[in-house]
Length: 339
Image 1 (tube, rainbow, N blue to C red):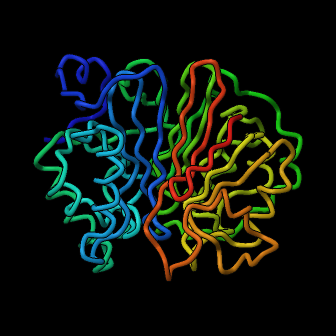
Image 2 (cartoon, rainbow, N blue to C red):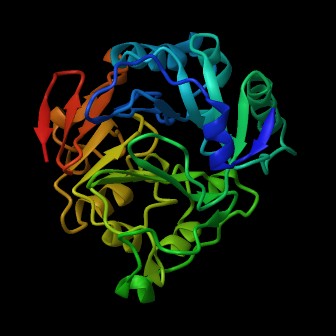
């Protein structure tokens, strides 16, 4: 059933919540899907929100890793699945995951712009076959998901971004004069990415999927519509097609979390831009980046997976508290750092 996003209708529908145990914190699991994206959020009320599902194939590897993180989190169903865009590394794992965990609500930007390509049509059709079993929510910038105890606002979707600044945003961005636009492909799903701003008490984070460089401009120039955040979920796996200095300097994150693979993302340009952003204390990475080498990777304690030869698919775990402080833990070695 396809429905247009309406807060009142969703609340009245009485959609089920996950059976995970409620806590006082917001928890996020950054799951290793080998250079794709999949992040599981568990809210203080016990609701679950999964952003993307990684790849298809590989004997169900990514669905298995998501299911394991869900089990660790006490999650028995996905209340909201947000698909940022319809590329293989973000939407490919939906059918395999749906065979393991019930998915109640499917959230996306609307029809794929890549339906003319065989691969684009296949992944979209496979996704829509699963959507037919649940509730379909097509979002636009400014929509909010009815998540208890926090704010979850859509800031980009379908090639558009929010028109008005969020609370905490609206500051002029003096660096916009140096923003250099690029030649983006308007028929690319990356530019359609559904981006989310999440606020829990004083804690703030943003996930823009693979939103392209030029599309970012509308969020941060001439004013910063997002405002400062505590954690920047790195756009586009740390590829240099996204993540301008003007955006990073406006966000002023304390920590960045990068869902790169060993041979995908984690580029020198993107890593350096984040590393040189004033106020950034650490960059946590899903993988050691082969492209980065020793000079452009984080300390090993802050990298979940060091080598594809011994790749266990370890995740990074974030626990955010209402007063704004948070900690990140590496599943591989249980190294934790508080901020």
